[in-house]
Length: 541
Image (cartoon, rainbow, N blue to C red; front, side, top):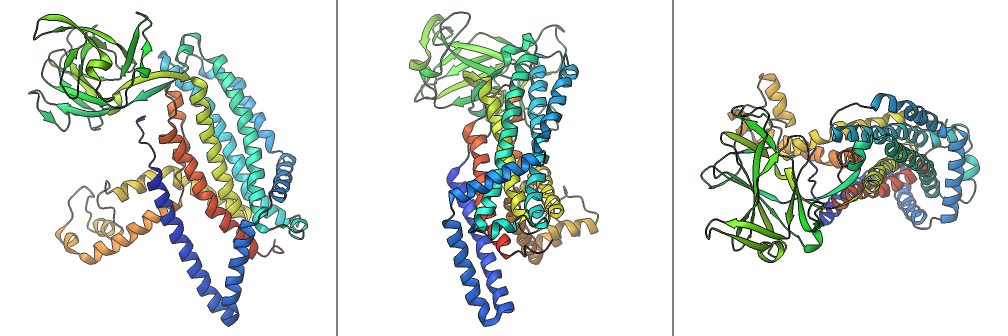
């Protein structure tokens, strides 16, 4: 997984949400107006605006007291329906989970990943079915049993019923997630082997921009492709002028830590380079690399000692604040201060090269980062739990909304389909919209299938010149763009990989997009749920 996630662009997200929500709102009002005109005639138009005004009034003038009362009633009903029996399944899993997870892998970092992934996956897979069933079956069951009639006959607004139901089910889910997360955290601390407990941390990385230089030292777009199908990493040739250069920004003396060996302030750098050997060399020796610190303005270069590259594990390097190095030009040993002589306005360039002849080192942008002081493991763990909780909230919101206009089984199937599409096909839709999938237009792909054409092959001249095909495909692509924003991307709620691999969950790149996703669906779902319940025939079973 790539842990170098891009921070959320809040203005862009708000503008996209406003565009999608505004388009759906205008389309809904237009359809409602037409239906009122066709079905109601002259009386339909005044009734349409009357219902619209009543709805706005009910949504604005909701009573917190009545909403709290309905939420409290929903909470008691969920407990009465034995929703908390999920704790029994949770307890059984954790009673016997340690038997199967002990000594699952000799690599320390993978042992930790197995335990953390097991706990977070168990919490998610146990809470989501409970939230889905409660949310989708709550209102339909109340309508079927006519228990909702005792509520709607009171001075209670339909909007308060919808919001109260959502808050009640969220309360049940919050209680369950809270208990399971605390028990899971204690279980991890107790079950993780002693030799791995030192890795229960939350690393805070600072990533930089990556540039390459070829074997002649000239600027290049990427390194050497050694034949790997996945072009994620590029390779630099050993014992040549090939370099990979990272430029970091925003550094300050507060980023320094205490080197445990020297006891002096130093900057911690971590890499996860890959090795590619053109010959075996000495079988029991690893490849070696070397860092060179570069001043971005003066091009002052300070070469650090060589270091061994251990694959599939953390390679740490402490860069002291006071650097002693051998200057090849003056042929003397000199001393430089890291922040006074090399860092300019928070910027620092770090070059990496491969030392061994005929060997290659592979790297991508996230493969080297400056590591800030670590945060407690609990910080990353409970952020991952918060992601599970937010996904539970979204499931409740969508489930209650669906139950306002369809019955329980249909609402369950509808919500399960949304989760399935939003989890498994969201990335595929984004690839189509970004143009990464060739020949993905609806008409174009149909013509290719009929002609037995491979999507990788260039467009035939008939397709390239057909304006009609391109226009129709653009219309369907626009519809796909709307669908991709209407169906929530449930993958953004999963922070498990960060925690399992010892990284802190970034707020702006991971947590905030999930928060805005929930808020973005909550408002339109509340409006839709209110009008659906208001127009629904409660006498029907």
